[in-house]
Amino acid sequence: MGDAFRPWILAETNYGYIKSNPYKVAVLPLGATEPHNLHLPYGTDVFEGTIIGEHICEAAHKKGANVVLLPTIPYGTETNMIEFPLAMNLNPSTLTYVISDLVESCVESGIEKIVLLNSHGGNEFKPALRELVNETNGHLFLCDWFKCIGDEYSNIFEHDEDHAGEMETSFGLRYFPNLVAKYADGTLTADDGERTPLRFEALKKGWVSITRPWHLLTTNSGSGYPHAATAEKGEKLMDLIVERLSTFLVELSEAEIDEQFPFE
Image (cartoon, rainbow, N blue to C red; front, side, top):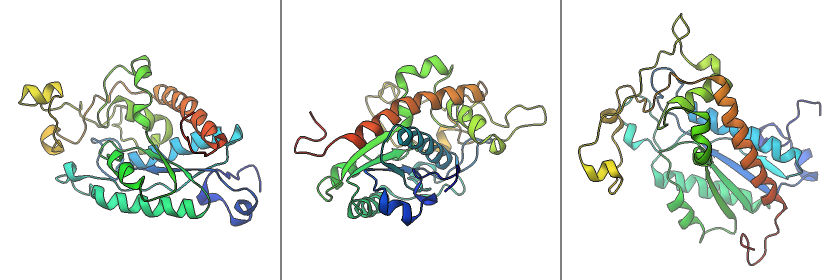
């Protein structure tokens, strides 16, 4: 096992290591395969979940946590993007079944603490957690990583983010720049990510919500201005996520499961 061995990543780890080094926490990234404006790859959510998972699990491992990153689920719920080609949909009920089976695989392996690391805004897993809590002996935690930085967002980025905007483009420029499409002059091939205004005041104010049909909301699936993105902003984003989520993983790994868990 040389320097390249990363025991916090299940896909790279062997049974010989796991027999002697049981894990206490499993992290399951959940992505999606869908268009991201004209410049980011279809696998953006998959790359984000995987790369963030690698970084937070590495940092937690180096702080003593017994944590393992599971392979990323590359498909998510795409019912609102169905008009775009190759937006690969799994209905919420299907995803719940998949997650349930994988959680039970972890529990049967002695890992009772499972973190769902969600990387796709179209995935809504709170209902799944409420259903699964009565079906498993595992303890489930949900992290939409893009929500854990809200209080610091404006200190890093200039424009709000919905889909394929400044934040996601900055992440891509830092962690998979070869897949971010540009013109010969170095500018992004993206449009400006403008959104079609909603008709009703109640929708604008958030008093009423809908599942937004993305082909009506956007021109090329982008919802958020990407042209202010930089690789440096992507790195600042990662630093903040790692600081917050790796700390949680360490605490979770060390915590004893008793009758009050996860309460004091």
